[in-house]
Length: 363
Image 1 (cartoon, rainbow, N blue to C red):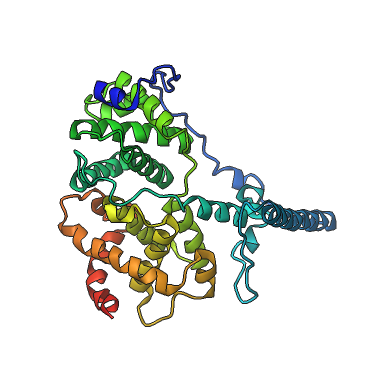
Image 2 (image 1 turned 120 degrees about the vertical axis):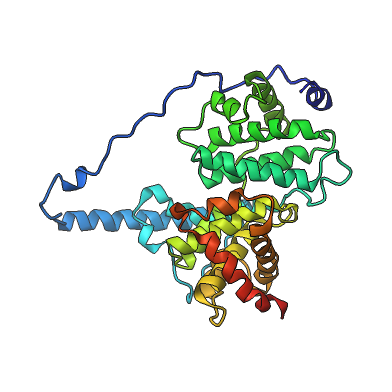
């Protein structure tokens, strides 16, 4: 711990967070009875219809305002949706929680931010190597699954780890990796989760290898070193969008999520844009689940992913090799996670189908 402080500079002047006692997560009361509270059918009046029409008009005006402001300020480059491309958000326009008015603006911003990425060769000449990183990432996935953390938290934690380790002055040692990993998850959970695990939970999951004080000190170092920049684009963000464009069912979405998580184990995917990794994950899923004889990369997927099939296929081919090798790999957490019935055993099917479609990527 002292060596990390010496290499990055003592930052004890920063305020630590998370110094709270472990408490039980609040129990959310069941809402199942509310749907049965009234047996009367909902009556829609002319006034209701007029209000809905006014609301939808305001949404469209807001969308145009965002487009205009973005273009005038040079902040984003919004692409116009072609007439032959379906508006996949049309049915969501009345749901204010989905912020449909700003969705294109948001994704344009995420695409702009993902242009800056860590180099896949950042570990060259360091005390740690890619094998150690892979072991750490596999363990990180198991911790996230144990704590029932969302996939956004997992991807953010991995992003924090890679960006922190890539700092030239750091040169972390093998003994410091778990502490950096645990702390990165602690930060990511507070950023993404509604009810994040407590600090003591992370001490426990590390088998007390990382103390409270070590995690808090490392948290200060990481947040300062990364300039508190945790609003980063991740594969999970783009995967939701392209899966919606493909009208993916639950099983297909789970398969794509499995492929996306596998990329966390490989240093080669660090330098690949998250949006492209998401597109490749879905592309491979469609080939496996819907058959290679169909032209899956249609106009909707080209527009909403931002990539042509010729750009996606090489990355999907690299991902396929990961899928094929995973059942025999020493890092088994992701594979076992997606072999569970809870996640529809998609990893089992993927392992078999991967061998069947391997020839598709040799041409």
